Length: 327
Image 1: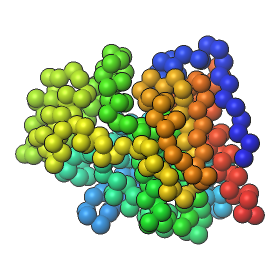
Image 2 (image 1 turned 90 degrees about the vertical axis):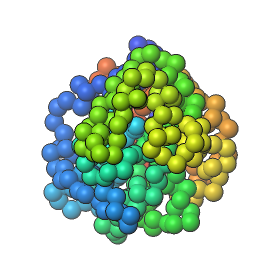
Image 3 (image 1 turned 180 degrees about the horizontal axis):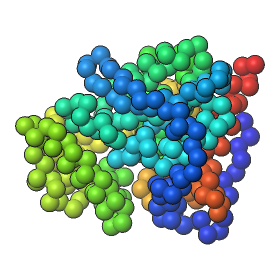
Image 4 (image 1 turned 30 degrees about the horizontal axis):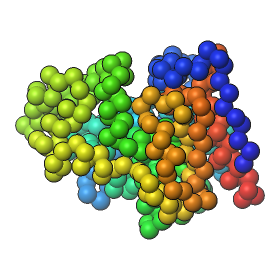
């Protein structure tokens, strides 16, 4: 596939502006046929976990396939970058499934247990079920930030537990080293306050629903993501500390060397949250393509005055390449 280079307007070459605009709600304003055709779906996994998603099918028959979209930490199936990506993919003939991670979006009531990023089994099973329901059509995945981390781990697991019709996965600004990313967030007051506000709101909802199980008052008074994580883990998880937890879902070094599912990784050299050096240290095989434009911020990659996401057409073109190659 010949990739279209990412060349943003000069005024869009600021990493923090890109990161801010990536989630700006006004970018998702306007007509969205994908959202208009969305139907809620509850996916039940073998351990009783329930995950909420939204399936958008085209009214007519389409053989383009289905794309599963995974949001980032404290985002949701209705995050701006999910809605705009889904809108573009739907417009180009793909069905779209937007999956909420546990305790994201309006799903806190579905499970009494807390969300931890190490919970790969339930997300993998959800993807398996979505893929089985879509058979014999191809499916594709695109994940953002933490959703990109999940996407990479799902692709890795497919080596031993294949999802036959998963044909390509794209990870955009994936968090490879959660420990470093947490410290980068804590070191940036604007970004830290953004995530603190969203996480506190999520914890408040969970405590309100399961007051007999959780008391997050000690966390709420802290103004540091790492400190809050340490307290939460020690009180409610089997992990001894944050580093042990972060290491459990890090994707570093040769972690992707055995991946056989075609994967595209997109990150920016100026990402203010995800350090780029960890991408240069990845040991990759020919099935994985790594793209590192100099600009783009975190989940940004906006290219013009219309704030169009470059990765949106990257997804369309990449998934179309598979479809056309099969004809």
